[in-house]
Length: 155
Image (tube, rainbow, N blue to C red):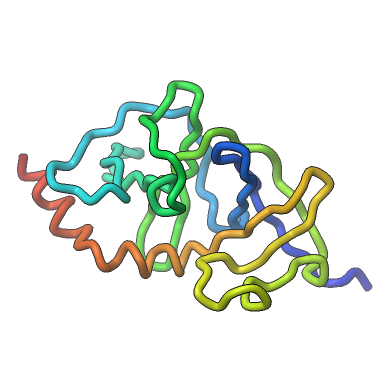
């Protein structure tokens, strides 16, 4: 019997590799126009219209304390589903879907319990941090997204 495995989608931000559970991914898109939300915190680039649904675009660079930059034409958007909403993550490059036995993934708690990652995978091309979308969402929930979105729709 094959040991339990995890499927993840790996992506790049600057020279660092990250991943999210494949089960959370709705779609990967080329970067497109983002509507800025007045008075939105730096964690939020703005919103996009995704098949008639207004979806918040998250600035992962800001969240990860990386050098900020504007969205580039060759960036990718990863539309993800969390337990309470869809979000868009802006990444430099989407790499590949990886399937690894769960035993190969170290838990982030082994390093630091405060991290917003669920695991760390040592791959052929270096270390990959597997992001926990629910922990990210909890951080974002402190920002009143509903209020921001309603003010944008009203404008």
